Image (tube, rainbow, N blue to C red; front, side):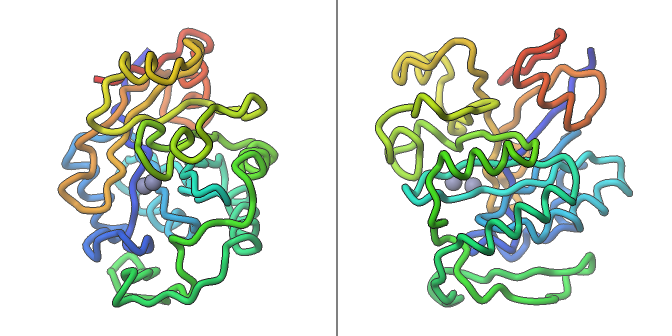
Length: 246
Ligand SMILES: [Zn+2]
Ligand SMILES: [Zn+2]
């Protein structure tokens, strides 16, 4: 088994809170410099930068997993990842259908730009992507799994926008491939505090909104090759695959 340094929670300039420097080209170049093997693109409630980052990553030997950070009706942040662009595009339709419509005010919320590989702005998203979807966390999870994706509730130990802060408990019906804990959180302490089932894998990623944070926090994946199916096996601890928070 080989080790792959993986950061699956990265925002681009498309997220209202994402720095203007976080263009697809910059992210791919930074990921190489920081020694990352696999990255995930997870803008708030949009997947529109995934394909470009994936294309630029492929040119430089970086594996890019298309994804999204969704905000459920209960204001829980959760990550979804998809194996191919058919699934990703279908998920984008789901987001378009369910995002609460609040016109974006760039001066207040931040810019939400889709750019090209040369950092030229192609379009700005009119609706605020930090708004929540009008569907429950269970419905979001079911949609991700219907599309054979990976579902990971984000920063579960945080005092807001997390599974435990918003719901107060782990819904028994919810199916997760892993749970993501915050950068500074201690894995053992989080497990004890929330009494997390030992069979559930915990992971850490950077949640980078600024260039300096990208790749600062990561998880090592012990897998055969940097593919979506291998990542899934590692999260589920199958066939000798595993993950380790350094
Ligand atoms: Zn979040
Ligand atoms: Zn985030």
